[in-house]
Length: 501
Image (tube, rainbow, N blue to C red):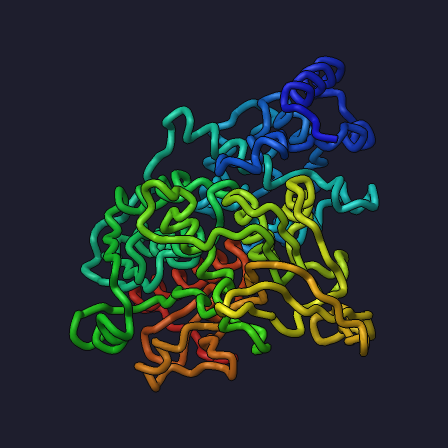
């Protein structure tokens, strides 16, 4: 049953009045109930693009912060790819020093409002939280991400966002390819050292996957633009509609344009397909195309958008990750009457965030586990009319650690749909590699780097999805920080060992 934000607020105020902060012992802190995130009513949000999770009330943030045990060994920091001082920023919340809290976060992360919304904290910092471990329930760990979001939103709402201090001009120039999380993070850290930074973005808007991939109802685009504006105020130049490999080759940036170093953060935007019969029918989309049309091109606004979107009544989404959840939930908002998520394992193995799965279920999306598409069936006009599925059972674990799905012979069934969205992952775009033979990649096209994010090319570094494959915002940021440190060391004359792995 949906709890109203008002009820959550009142419960938090009541509980907060009953406890005395300074007298809480560890056991009493762990007895404080985990604060649920207020959200739009599921029935209402199916018909709008407004953000689903509406954010903590102040009393909720204080209560959730009081649950933190302030562990001396701080295991949560070990789980954070950018190593935010988590206990310190949470302690500042309990002290009601919210500005200090966000300043502590920003020492390590330029994108707290974004990470607080979309990062899988349950698999990172919160997974190592002592509270969750002692209570033997990871869902009862301190909600670090929600607290990060609270203080970053508070800073923005009060207009207190500050610009990082920039060191004197060094005369050095660095090119950043891609304006996603890795590129933004690298650009900020390099610019702070006084180097001239130019970001080259292939699309007409900066932001990378945060703009074209993640829907408005999960990450409002204004928040991304605010972070981009911070970079611009820092003096970072951004050139859009610039496709490195076509507009300009990688080597030209070094040899002709005078850049002293390059960071490649171009992401992994080449969609994978099933390679089954019927994937060329009208009504079959990659999740990349579908989400880019609806997010970046605003196809949901049929009256003023320049790009069309297929009007579907029954949609099947193939896959079990966050992208599949985004595509399924966007389909509902565009007007689909029925949306099915088809996944060949069980819910336990789904890589999507638990929160996103829960939101999807509340919005009426139906999950078909232990099934997958065998072929897509079309009508006489070449449009999707149905999908033949086959059932699976789980066998022994595979290389990913998840139990391997095994087909059950003779288990075929028909699902009536008029659209199929394929959300089974992405490969790296081969353009930069095709135009830069010196750049070493693996068999999947991911750029090979050493521990310092250095590539096989002199003065060229890389990070994010182009290295990791499809990863997360915070992991991409982590690599952006490593690469930035390496580039700053390079430009200051500090040498590092190179071991490509």
